[in-house]
Length: 196
Image: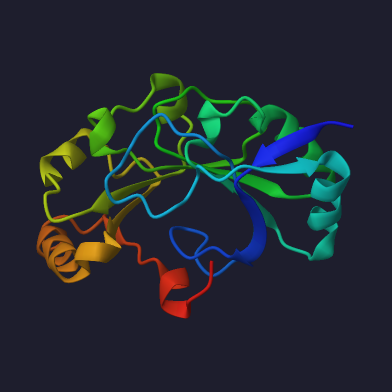
C-alpha cells in the first residue's frame, strides 16, 4: 500500500473566502515554489501516511469539503493520487494555490492567491478555472495589480489583511473599497477562533 507525504491533515472550519464557516477536512501538502516573507504555514514538515490511515481519517467525521493546501499543492506530485482517494468519500475538492502552476483534473473549486514573490503571475491554464481570487494585503501592497481583473465576471474577489500588519492593512483595504465595491474583505476567522 502506498505512503503519502503530508505536512498535516486535520478536521476544522474554513476560516476565509467563499466557504468561510463551512466544516472541512484539510490536507496540507509539503513543498512550495515560493518563499513568501509572511507565510503562516509550516509546509516543510513531512509526515508519512499510509493510504489506509488517510482513508480512516476521511471517515472520522462528515463534511462537504476537503481543502487541499500547502505550501503549493499543485507543485506536489502526489496531489492527483490523493484526489482519487478523496472522491469516493463525497468531498467537494477545494484547492488553495498561488496560481503559478497548471490545473490538475479532479479539483472542483480553486482559490487563487497570487503572490508578490512570483510577480503576481497566474498560469493561464489555472486562471480560467479560478472560482475565487484572494490577495493578501500587507503594508507594501500595490493595489494597481488588481486592475487586471474583470470583477463582474461572476467570480469572487477578496482582499485579506496580512495578520502581522492587520491595522495598516485593513485601513488600506477599506480606503480602496470606497471606489472598488466589488472587492470583498476576507478575514482569517479561524485565527480569531484560535483553531487551525
